[in-house]
Amino acid sequence: MDSVLLWPNPEKEQVKSLAQQIALWLEKRGVRALMPQDLAHRLDLEGMAFFPEQGTMQEVAWVMVLGGDGTLLLAAKHLMLWGKPILGVNLGHLGFLSEVEVPDLFPTLPLFLAGEYELDPRHLLTAEVFRQGRTLVRYEALNDVVVAKGPFARLVNLETYVDEAYVTTYPADGLIVATPTGSTAYSLSAGGPILSPDLSVFVVTPICPHSFFDRSVVIDARQTVKIRIRAMHRDTLLTVDGQEGFPLEDGDEIRVSASQHTVNLMRRPGWSFFHVLRGWRKGH
Image (tube, rainbow, N blue to C red; front, top):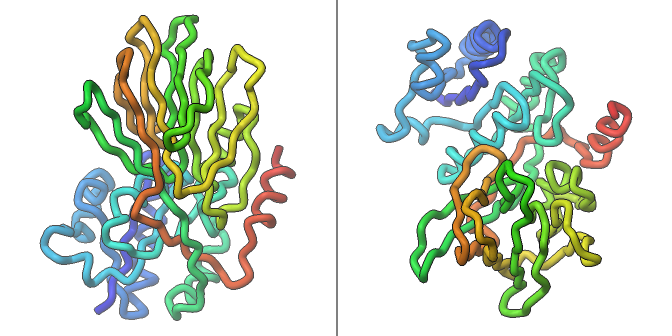
């Protein structure tokens, strides 16, 4: 029996009831609903718990994320090694990653169950932190990698390279390296451009730079961005998709490059990024 993996945001008030409705709907059509063990435990839905290390993921046809863009970002990075398509069901504000709102879910589910959908591949970034020549951590990012100063009103100097070419040293509050997917997130609020998600590029956007070189730079995804920390204080932080963080020190080097992984989002036929963009602009 094929299975669909449900990945809910347990903080959403209506998510347990919705998960139960989806599981019942799928069961009537001969499809089993599964859920990661920790999430099933938090929602008191132990009968749906699954264990990927036991090979259960081989049975999963696709994944349904119940939440918002933040929930989908988290799920995508946990699941990227399995390469399963992801359907985002939006339980919050308008999102760029989610595909359907709750009122449209059950009328459109037969399309997805019948395989009548398109895949929207999204590329990820890999970020590595080096200190004195040693690799300390490695992260994958679907939206962005951000180097930013801490809570105190002091600038951080960020010596920035594209491959081996020196770009500039930004005296700024921080620097964002974003995928096209992430161009509508933090980078946009910092003044960066909106990029079509099918482009194979990155955008580098400074945060409140104290210099004349304050524009975003769009580079080819085959290139590597290197950022060296030039600061006398130790409250600088690397954040990944706004969900993971690592403290940085003076002299640390961050290397950001294209990841080997992609995430495939499920879309109804005829889906358009620009339709979503129009809806977002109306909401603002």
